[in-house]
Length: 240
Length: 112
Image (cartoon, rainbow over all chains, first blue to last red; front, side, top):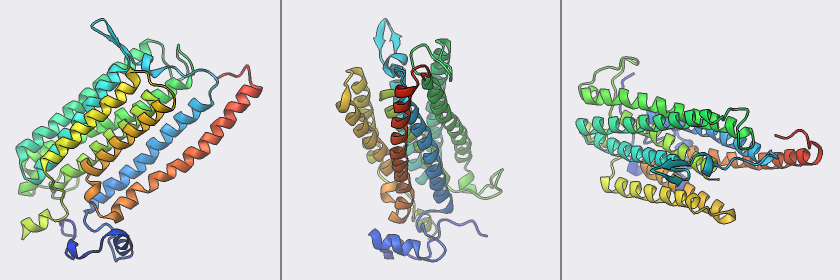
């Protein structure tokens, strides 16, 4: 099978839009997602399944928090830090949020430069994204060790409902794992971009296929999703 | 020809757009943090948290993940199914209320 760009059998401008387009695309032959490659469609479908995983985590957190008769620990105080003698509530989480948003911004730029075939800028922005992601994981490790040191366990904590620890470790642990895999993914793709694999048609080590610059956008989808999940964790777990 | 084909179906947008969205995400995150910093409580707190959350999620999905420019067949296939989680939320709210009721009513010793 030839390794082609997204199938462009017909000119996309000829296709109908709106609801008529939805029906036409889904009832057509062979391919429902007309303008995206299989790689991008599959990444979206993976992200959809991941949405359900994180949705269930947040849902179980909601259930245990609503049903406990013991007061829930106040996250604002639990995650407060003293910086320069000033007591700041939730400050570490706020910094982590800004770091992750910044990394989403640099990723969006990387995708843009990838489609302009600017290899140097693309690779550098991807590495910057990876560095920001790694620092996010570092801060999370700091947060975890601080809480463990203070006596937070999945089965107990000094401040209130025992379910606080289990929800915290499960949700942030799963999210941190996603960030870690994202960093690895970013570094691998950045190396390929830097080396010019997508210009000289070098075949992938794992797939033995030629890659395309679109992989930068697909990597970006995953990375933005990690940021997206953090938006929900930040709102429901830390701020609620 | 190859160049034209390669550009079809690609997401190429002005850098300025990304910067604007980026700045907005910073502003919205700051607002979220300020909700906690000023210790707003009750419905005001929850509605503000949800508002800023949905705005941020919308900006990330629509612009950074380019969903705004994808065909609706893909957008609906990906964005509609998560709404079903809300049904699950409804079920679990009822379930949690019931669990809380039994704990308060019958299990004074079985706290937790």
